[in-house]
Length: 319
Image (cartoon, rainbow, N blue to C red; front, side, top):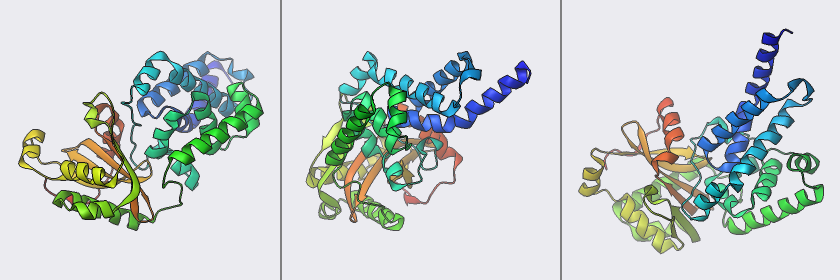
């Protein structure tokens, strides 16, 4: 092939891997915007490389993206942002290619907001091993080569990561949840919160339920609630429609049911702008965890996807 044809061929090889690389970067970084940057950096590495000597492009690109993400996770700026306690993963609407692969329950659970949040407790290296093994099914031999560690170290990192996530992911990992049942639970929770029925709210929560919110990006740290009574109180205050809220918003928001990172969620929408996401982990017919995200910078990609799809029915028509 001449130079132009070779460039087109090599560009095609990279583009064929783009979605997979973005999905890997998103799982490692928890941010779609940062994942896109990492993939773009990988493209620059690909352009600069002697591509004729790369025998397995997908493996080479996976290694490059993984190590670019590790560099980001280890950077002083990222450590400051994430250790300050004011970070939650960027939510993605169901169907976003960054959520793949999603062939198994384990792969889908690994990209849930709950597990992405828990992965913040892992070291960057343990996080990489966990993602490469659990979500992408790489062997420990392949992972060791990508991360420049021994196979024994890869096994140890995976064991510790699994143990830590399983111990903290209370109520999670219990198997698939029937979609109709999950939606029914969310609708009941929303109806109870909107009408101020505290007892019903508490009954819909597991005994060890937790909730976390970014406070719409207005607080220095995350807001955490760790009893059904406290979660019910904050849900009642947050979901109860009032004239003051309507005046603050300037118009009537709508609440839509959706799937976000594979879990049921409520999207709060003003016009065509998603202004808040409340996602639910459900187990045994009750809510085990609630994640509230409303920082505008975390909702850019989700809003873009929301505008492009047919929207579900409203949970309520007035606020």
